[in-house]
Amino acid sequence: MAAEESWDVIIVGAGNAALCAALSAAEQGVKVLVLEKATLEDRGGNSTFTAGGFRFCHDGVEDLRTDILDDMTPGEYDSIGNLPSLSEDEFMATLMKVTDHQADEDLGRILIGESRETMRWMRKHKIRFIPMFGRQSFKIEGKHHFYGGVNIEAVGGGWGLVDMLVQACDRMGVTIKYETGLRELIQDQKGRVTGVRAFGPDGYEDFYAKATVLACGGFESSPEMRVRYLGAGWESCRVRGTQHNTGDGIQAAMRIGARPHGGWSSCHAVQWDISAPPYGDRVILDNFQKHSYIIGIVVNMEGKRFIDEGADYRNHTYAKYGKEVMKQPGRAAVQIFDAKTHDNVRDEYRIREVTKATADTIEELAEKLDIDVEGLKAEIAAYNAACPEGAFGTTYNPSILDGVGTKGLTVPKSNWALPIDTGPFHGYVVTCGITFTFGGLKINTDAQVLDLTEKPIPGLYAAGELVGGIFYENYPGGTGLLNGSVFGRLAGKNAGLLAKAA
Image 1 (cartoon, rainbow, N blue to C red):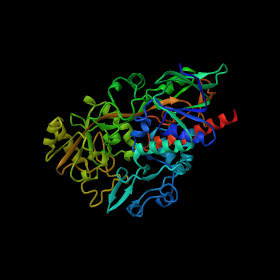
Image 2 (cartoon, one colour):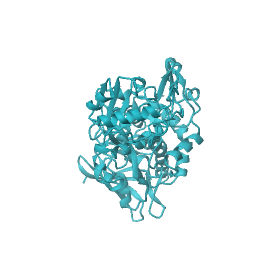
Image 3 (cartoon, rainbow, N blue to C red):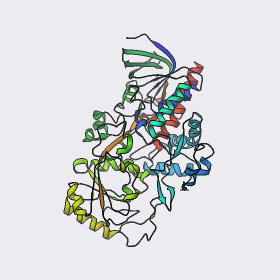
Image 4 (cartoon, rainbow, N blue to C red):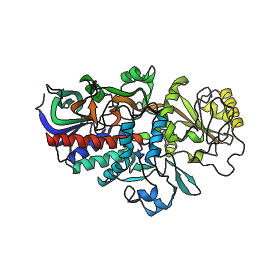
């Protein structure tokens, strides 16, 4: 075992939540160590594999130009037709709606109430942001119309976000130790967490600190834990992000009596290209996702629709529809678009590494993709007949909930119901990609980890995906990174203050 090392604050993990915690702790003038299980090249956890999008409260594009988008070019600004504001009440209503009113309201109020100030804080640390032109807008009469509440991303996406946060940590004097994974938490006789035991290139090492922050992700990369908590068959899903999120922080904390909390049987899971590798690809990143289903239809390999593609904005449904694909034969589905809408699919449909087919007829498309031909013909005929005739005229605007839905179908399409009747037809084959799990540790409003009696475990804080209680069953797009930043900042600050006072 290597010689013991002592620090003021230890942060476990090196994704968005962890790096925000490290920055916030360093602002208190204390000595901060970040322990990252991955190599330098594989750093960043799940954050690297995201689009870098943030949902937060603001008063529209004019408001954002003053601080968050202060380096946006005049051309970018002029290209925006509508970028809706987001109030705290709207944000809270969305969070409660998509989680079936199960989200912890106290944590939700912190998440939402601190959202704008946290974005300002990140910008002060030189994190740059830009509107999500390619993924969260539709062009109408030459202007970008944004929708769904998550319209701002870090420059360079998730990879850019992590890189900018690491640079900020370097400027603040934070030390990052790579290839060093948490194995257990160290406590004194009174139960106070005094450090961590980790395994690195030189074997086991003990690192001591006055406060520790766990921010090393959920358990989505552990097939055993997925099956245990999500159910049979979940060992076979693809993982969108890092292979390193195997529940280490959750399990280490539970071994010392931390309280499990939240939606342990649910997760963030999306429609993901069926040819994607088992774990995230650091070149393709999140471009294997396929999220333009709202302007098309989704069928299984029998040709049957099974979700309401127009139930709500993509940002309110995409994180739960991957689970629905998991239930289909072969854990596969096909998204189908015709010539009327295909030009409006998101950027990720245009990558070279995509599983697709194009055909002049529905029959030919079905044959190319091994979909039941007669089943698909019958399904599309029934869907087309259920679409309101001439409902759109010349205006088709997926940036608003238009209420134009099908009539008489068992599985409706509640908005944007446009017939699939104009060739060429395009089909994209998808499976389920899991992003992160919703079950985790219980924390209080100071980001302290609670024990089984609901008392804080002294010296232990948590932030990010390993915190339970905020998301259940579903998730509003762009809230994951915000969650990591808000609670990472809070946990790091309180850990730093504790260490400073010790």
